[in-house]
Image (cartoon, rainbow, N blue to C red; front, side):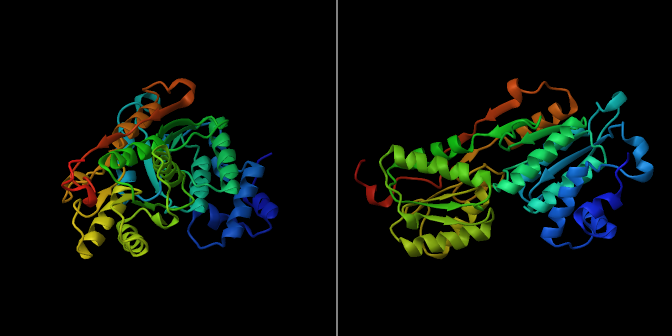
Length: 354
């Protein structure tokens, strides 16, 4: 028996119009109401309705690419590389596939809504990029949604995202812990012992993994982290600027600032210049990702290069069936330390020969 919009509305105890608004995303709906509707959609396995039911056995030529923020170069580079592979020859019967980029704005509700809409459209594939949101309820809802997509014949690929066990998703995951550790090891090797850290949003796996790598390096070298040395923020320049001011207010003796990504690092550099601090003579700065502007910063930015374009292209080829998935469905992609001018020997070792 076909599940209708009215069935979903009854299960969620809302009007059919509210269900339509949630699924179409064209009108504000309270988060609690949205969650009830999406839960009802999953419980009833509502995918297609009315005239579209005749297409239930088909898989469309639509591919969804989910990003946090398409204006962020991190996501833009991956999305462009994915789309370049999807847009080429190779769809069903030799045709092409239509790639649709969905920018969630970091909202877990939008992430689930886009997946529901792609499920209703019988998308041939879905590629999710970047870190996952660490929230038990959202993680469970995402796992359920990804399983249903895979079971319906949609290929699910995670690009730069942690694996999602038992969902059928293929994961190309970045070694953020290893990169974070290698970056801080480099700074420690230069002689730094007082390192401030600007983290990203607390709920993101990328944030946690990079910070864990940083702290692992400190611990390995017997450096006790001062609680004042870490500030949480966002993955943007303004956050880096504000966090650097706060770090140096807390501890003016810091000799290095490690930023959650390159945009944050640029903000840190701007704050240091405004404070009259020289980079790297007074304070060293390091970032993460190696976005295109990093090498053109003054001084050029020491960072960890993630192969964003390469990973995106690989995800696109796997999506299109032109490359075999990695063994076990999971590949760990390591970053590369890029040593440049923004990090140097700390000021208290200048001229000592150490």
